[in-house]
Image 1: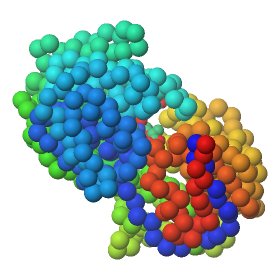
Image 2: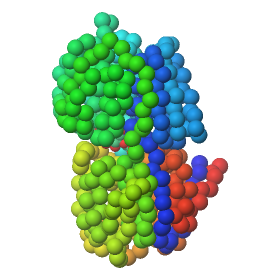
Image 3: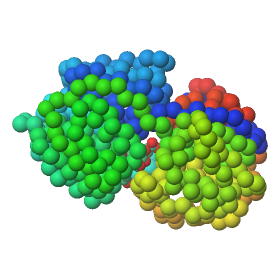
Image 4: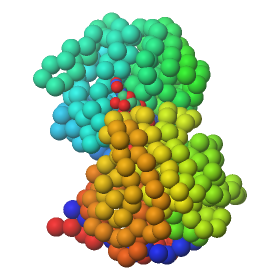
Length: 422
Ligand code: EPZ
């Protein structure tokens, strides 16, 4: 397993290109199952999770070709030859559940392994299943798989989510595009990835209104055509790299960054004394003077502060001037980066879903272990500011969500390198 070694202390200056959004691409790719015609995705990120989704779709009979060094994905699902999404692939990536809605809508039946939990939480899929039942699906859970059927096809219905769920909204939205009649989704997720999926489906001929708001209305159509769609910019990669100059000092331009994708996050950076400026080719971030100021953070569904940036923000607050309180409201176990940061000299007290961080002068480099995707990049960020050398192990977590992180940071002056593991 590869490791990444960072020697802290360098201020960062330069430009970092921001890729297409992993979490948009992972829901756009299954949309190919909704149509017999080709779907082309541009601005696709080059990540291991994308390859996993490619393998899953190919196992169902889709053809997926990566062009232009993986930045373009040409997908076509003329015929679905296998209706079972196997546990072996699904267990590697929970987003695999997103083939359920489209496959059921197109074929009238689907068998998908339940994804199981992951490091940050149990992550059930009950809301996905209830949404499909509201569209007339009959579901049976057997041997760790969900067997879904809709012999006479799905029919429009009202789906009211008791809590916001990004994935369940995506499954429901895709399924509803081919359901007979009108579907209304209430308490829908408003994340930019939902809006991006809706725009792609509209390009394919779907009738959708209200995307990006809590109420989405879909008029089912008989069939969808192919389309070409650009994957939206990755707001989590954007926020992650905005924190690099915030932690080290210096000035970095995030190419392709758009403020409206990260407004709640940018407000918190402003409160912490970090300058965020819209420039011609993206966002420019610099630390005004001296260390960041302590700020309180509470994660929430979009447009609130993203849970996927909580770990990275904690790395900044470990070196901020003062005491910060971070409250994680989305997942039940998303502070696993805290013990690793503490090994670097951070002062963090975790009580349930609340972490109290007392800023220290400087962190100290250490051997640390990545536990999940966003925790691993927060350790890289901490290493950029720490004294001495930090070695982050198990960076396969990192490669799931970040394209060539060491290259992007080294291009701005970071002393960072990847060491191939055994
Ligand atoms: C998506 O996961 C993202 N993944 C996550 O990003 C992100 O953290 C999350 O949304 C929240 O923004 C992808 O888009 C591939 P949810 P998802 O359904 O859809 C509970 C990353 O680092 N819940 O919005 O799985 C769930 O347990 C990843 O890129 C149910 O109880 O998240 C959680 O507590 C991590 N039942 C909360 O809802 C359900 O049926 C929000 O989950 C579904 C979810």
